[in-house]
Image (tube, rainbow, N blue to C red):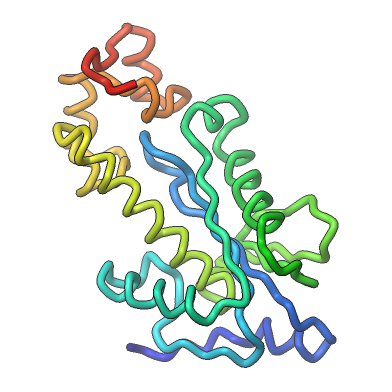
Amino acid sequence: MKHYDNHEIEIRLNNEGYNLIAGTDEVGRGPLAGPVVAACCIMPKDCIIEGVTDSKKISEKNRKILEGIIKEKAKSYKVVFIDPKKIDEINIYEASRLAMTKAINELTVKPDYVLADAMPLFIDIKSESIIKGDEKSFTIACASILAKVARDEYMVELDKLYPEYGFAKHKGYPTKQHLEAIKEYGILDLHHRKSYGPVKDEALKGNFNKNEKK
């Protein structure tokens, strides 16, 4: 796998005396269905894993390989799911922040510094919000891989329950296939985000999937 030079931030923090650096990231802000998922992890100082970068730039096969390595090497990691009902209740931005915060708080090792991907956090630990953090920070990139693999696997399992929507393929994003399936079969009360435009329209019409497993 390709080597990415993304340890500069961690090296700076190590030199400032921080040794337990956590990275956190979320996936799933854009989909019409499924949870938003955040991961947080603390990697050992000087840890290098070839191929780790923004999860969107890694093939599905390599993401799964890297996920296993990250979990094996991590001092601590946590993955948190926030369901569509909560997303609709507090909005996707706050749901993403909630997922990250819960993941940080549920680590078995308390970090002394937190790096977050483009998300200001209100926590009692020193933290830094980094734009494109999943490209610039090794630790955030590790978290992005954990979150992406976990969410994709969830959507594949959801596809087994509702194959008519094609969740295994589009993972809940608003593809043509997904939008057509919503109109034909209705929305899933538990799994679609009713605050999102196309889903909201169908909810107002009362177009719900009557065969949903509650």
